[in-house]
Length: 342
Image (cartoon, rainbow, N blue to C red):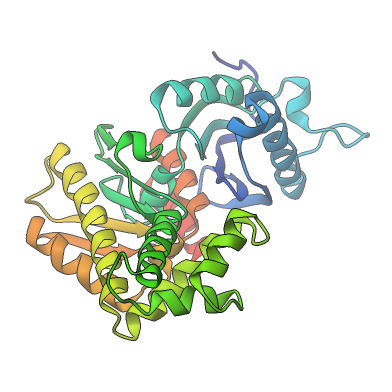
């Protein structure tokens, strides 16, 4: 699928990082200059359908184009609406593009908007990886609400996992940690399990006296299910206070992160080479000392030359860098783009 007209930004990139909760869009010139940007809501095709999700994405792209001054018509309509591509290439890293078949479906829908001559859709974890490495080489583990891992090499080879929950063998992230903490706290209170301070700290977070009261509130949804994610910081604090059960849960999370990273490194032939392991997502951004120490120790045992670090750059930078990679842009363009987001 191609667009014949000359793009408004020759050699430019439309970078899209669309997560479950927010979407960032940037229009980037061939030299790495960010011409325009916009932020909008989350990207959730499983909830609203592919068409509606891409419609919402289009509105954010239009605002980024307006920010870049790329308007043609007196009524303010986006120039791409008349068939003129905005840029040479769209690099879209999207949540819920977990399987290659989903990437292909979304790529067709995004390319159909005519924003660029060429389009590449990838899972949003690839944006986090590329944002955290100087070259397209390494592995990323994202531990946010859930958990995912991808890897890449400069020659285009990748490593990835389905990352769609327990049916694909996944455990962890904020949802898994909260669920495990609740499990142990409930059993501690009723006597089926050993003692843990979580039996007091979890209900106390919501102003409740017992785990029974918290179980009832969650079951009857007087506390919305979405608020379970608030329990991850409580788990961290309980671990910091020395609770053995809380620490065992973080040990399990460290094991999962290392297992993902080590398998991805091995698939790419990097297990015994120096390679970056980029850590992203809210659980990693918290930099809990016990969890970070545990995963670093375990990763060093599996991959002695691996370099783990928490990514600080925004994922939209990674999407843009992937676009510049695709266009074989010079290193100066990459440096200029990184400087913008520094």
